[in-house]
Length: 97
Image (tube, rainbow, N blue to C red; front, top):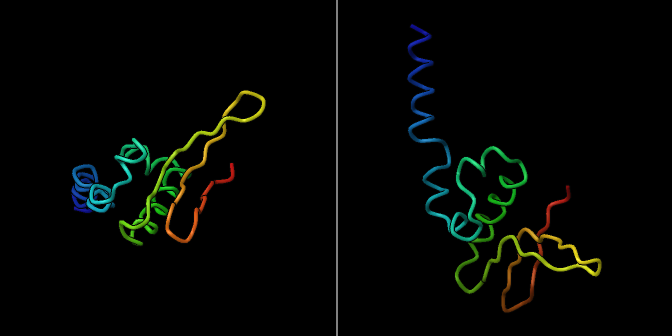
């Protein structure tokens, strides 16, 4: 009986994973281009998503930019995970790898 309950539980997770409704209602997928699976299986993206969701609550008067690449002096680029632009300033959120 326990095996049947476990199988039903796993099937429910596959059909509708946790966070799916919240993920779809946030603008993170469109802004970043990352799928729910990519976001949940990568710690860095997961943290970026959670930060995005928190910052998104500030409203439309704030603009959120994701995955911004800036050129460096040596010709390579560096990525900034999130930038929030508001009337009071520019805030940068970057994960440390």
